[in-house]
Image 1 (tube, one colour):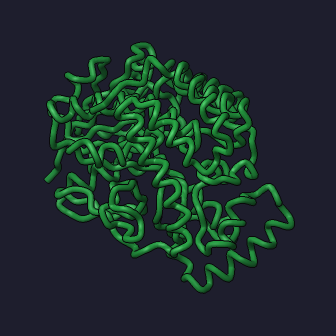
Image 2 (spheres, rainbow, N blue to C red):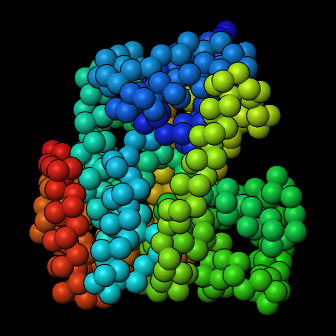
Length: 425
């Protein structure tokens, strides 16, 4: 029996992620015939992606009913699943998140999921997320909230604490690590299975090849690669040799969580390259919307796991995905229950069920605990719109090496984000 559902995609005006999610939804046979409602505050970008959705839907033959609207609340009526990819003035504010701390001597990498940048992503994003889930509590209280927006750990933690809406965060970083491990082992990525365990942007446990072979092979191959390509994941490999598990998902993201993270590079996000890529994608979309041929890769799954989660929750069968970000509650026994954890998850019509891989190695758990504490304070600062708690979150963050710098950057970034910071509870 075919089951159909209503999927609401918030932030659908994003070209890159919007395309990625459309590809995955339309190539998932179990979802054929469902309703997809695209939502974005930018009417022009939304109309563009809705037009693309109609083209890809027709090309795939998946038979979706496509809707689009700027009215989020009405869109949520009857939804079974809500995908969130919304962000607030993302690139402009992200630049400030990186540049202002650097001006005060804070050495960091991306400034997105950790450090001062991660704090201000949290402060401005959580009010928007809570607006969405409060509407869900009224309009579709049984729906599953699937988050792709950063900072995912903090969003999942906040909703675990303060909302009854079922939530999972999904990040493709795990598969970036799979590709890195496959490169080192000189194996096809499809032959390397991975399971996430820890927190977003931290460790990965590889389940194939078998552990003894893996540890020996990764160690010798890693040393060989280090000599011939010192630019390839040097920080990640140092941590692998020190702690025994391969961290995810790149030196830049991994580096956001560590006091010595600047050793992974201090250039920040490549905004110029991002704009070039967006322009290229915009041109390709224009060509398709003008009647050009749909690129072959757009007719296949993109690798995101959102559609797999939805299909698993709809069908009367259990489906396991490699990792999801969930409210911990014992999934990782040696991290606090009141934390966001990354773990494999089983999905069925009854909900999301984390699969525990047991406790993390003690040293890794202790390394992660430093970030758990920062995330907990950052969430409290955001939901209460408290500058006092925000300062406390900065002062316990491993990357912040000066109380004076913390106070100065707090004042400047708070002012830049003032219009978005407000209490959530």
